[in-house]
Image (cartoon, rainbow, N blue to C red; front, side, top):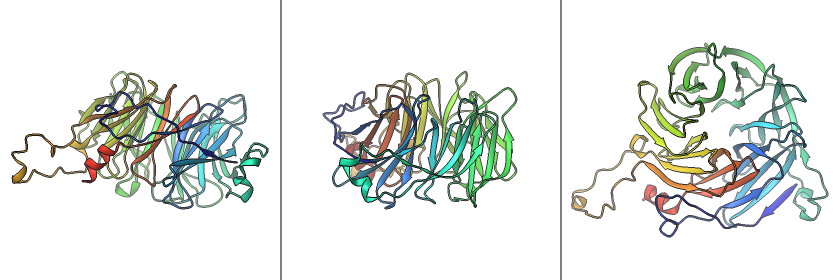
Length: 392
């Protein structure tokens, strides 16, 4: 099924600059019929088209995957809906295999679950007929293979550069898989530290993507995927608070960010694990997702149970080296050429429930999406003022 969506007005509050002084495009808002907490950026058939996939999480109804595409010229959002009966706990995609997603999901009434790779069927001409949209049921996803998990899977995602390797995580085990064929072959695993449970994981895109990081309790541990041995740890990264999210800087080796139940986002150099390089108190409640921008790594997105999405600047520790003022600018008193200070740029407040996921577009570095548990999917842009301050 497909659906065209009209552009809706927005509220962008809590910004360092008011809406009158920040040129912020209004968002596009889509309401799902079911709760949702899982989202990923995907590569469309045309890689220049921004696209996202959202999985719903209802224990009582048949669930769905919604595939969104954004038309920049028309400033419009379109959606296709695919059936996925079990409730979806996480969803991922890879640029190496467009048209494929992986989900972690429930399995009947069991406390365990499954992790499945799916092909997304290509759209047919009937899918574009809005008159028949409500009459036709959602198109089923095509199962490629499923891992039978002994406990609830937390994530299942691809190697950053290879479609033949995947990583899965459950509360007690981190596992690597060879998925070159139509099934998965176990390549090794590592157990969670005694007395702890894994919460999330993230590939390190540097060093041949041979390393991953996991969060358990208030700490972070790094692992060599070739030996499945631990290579380092930041214990007490968020002292007394659960670490909920991790991300590696795509442009700077050894740099990692963490977000936790204390509302903080912290930036670390893995070679100096005693203290963070930078520490933001962005949110008033748990931070569920934090992401570096893929191209402009000074831009940081965060989402939280405080119903908000934050856009922050971490330029002082980014890969961007601020240019020194020219001699002619040394007497510049208005500070027009000064670098943007670290901290919050804008707070987006269109959500009315916990925002579990926020992701940058893989096609447009100035576009991002967020989804809250009440099923509200929102597409937003980086403020033009911030965009031009980076480009000019």
